[in-house]
Length: 127
Image 1 (tube, rainbow, N blue to C red):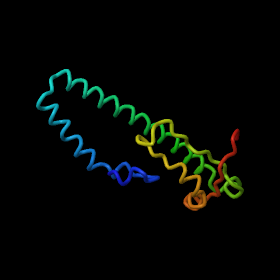
Image 2 (image 1 turned 180 degrees about the vertical axis):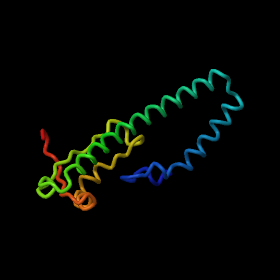
Image 3 (image 1 turned 60 degrees about the vertical axis):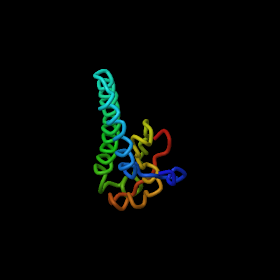
Image 4 (image 1 turned 135 degrees about the vertical axis):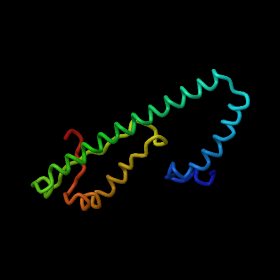
């Protein structure tokens, strides 16, 4: 795990096994020494973290779906031939929770344009 710390990009799924290995001792400690208050606090913390993550993903999905619908609604129109302006979707949560890959979208507009069959350009601020 230590070798990926200086890496410019890491995939969260790569740490799945390490997370499981780290969670096992925590669960054992809870099972051996835990009491109802400790279990309750852990459950509340887990549910709140899951709710926060779900909210972030649903919000991001909604904004991606809106952009997708906007692009598809303009297919075959002159805006697609001239350059349909799209905006990048900012992420308001940590990259550890949601890696939105909008940097890839901005640097790969040619590929995204080919995928949709519509020339896409980044919207200027204020458009």
